[in-house]
Image (cartoon, rainbow, N blue to C red):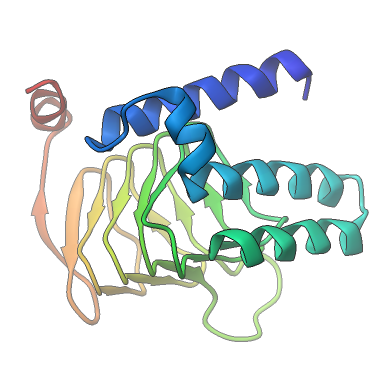
Length: 187
């Protein structure tokens, strides 16, 4: 990953946070004061080291980032651009988690496994999904594009694109068309 790409992705992340958080006033404020940005930058460094098989160093960077931000992201996780963790304290993202572009998580979210499985054992969260505070999304499941997971829900099964799931265990309560989502986003 080149320096130019890293810088472009950082600017995209900063702008995405400004769009999604009414309290964010400037790129400088977000860069200096939002733990989410520090966690993402730490993750990108750790992930680079992880891919180069410097596992101990990658985990060291990950744990250092967790110490300073309260956000635990395993360096093996794959995270797209525009990722936003609002009030991130207590967020945990497991080793085989995959997170698409423009995904939002709130505090206390866990993207975790369900036991000692091997291979892919953490969730995949597709582009534009939002996962509410305290939600637990567990196992090798897929949260669909543009989907919403309600606060404190426990999700153990796939959620289709443009659906809202709530409860323990999570159940689909509403489905949206792509046009409805686009209209809501532009309003």
